Image 1 (tube, rainbow, N blue to C red):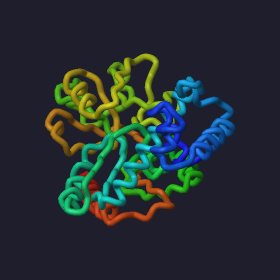
Image 2 (image 1 turned 30 degrees about the horizontal axis):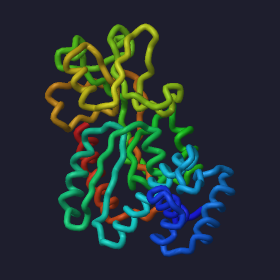
Image 3 (image 1 turned 180 degrees about the vertical axis):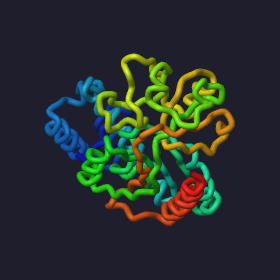
Image 4 (image 1 turned 180 degrees about the horizontal axis):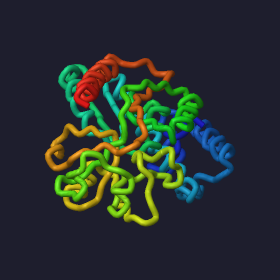
Length: 302
């Protein structure tokens, strides 16, 4: 099959006639009919009901046209992008880290004259990996710890992904300012046992290596799940729940949340992942320099 055949099906369905469609497409009717038969033969389906009064789509034909329209629309968007000189796009995809806004804003200010669309997407670990693998985003930000490091590094190797360590951080506990544990300088796992935990949702709850939250869940405690960082912070500020992470807060919720180190905690490596088959853009290089400067200041402060 090819794009021309998709257009043939779309036009025939629109005008309801092979002969009229052939005129609009500037092809002969025998050529048009032969091309449609090729598609039907390849898919082993019938796309049109043919009668003396004209043609109409079969059920399979309707399904085919739905996919064909999507493909043709994407082709049209691609042609507009390159032929009309559309400005470039830049995308970073990440786990939920508020400190990324600083390097991201630096990129938007530096490259606004040559780039039209800037994206900073916070999402699940699986989506990050797939987005970098499929060339949808240029940079992916996530963390490695002793539990997920081996599996994720194997995935990086299999999917031709590079990774670079940006910094190492020990597990910290995020608490609302009025939480009973906020007065402690260091928190233990036993301290947390009677409080609910707030965690980020992942697509595959059975894949522990995809978890964004460093601490495991317990059968004895309640767990609140959310996909939004703002909601997580609001839940912490309004309850006795806690969350775990790298211990970095730079956004607007900083005054509502306290961070406490977890005793005998694992050390996590924040990493950036890229696709080996994609050359890094000037915007990507600029973002990474700014991000490293941001993290350098945080590490010095700690």
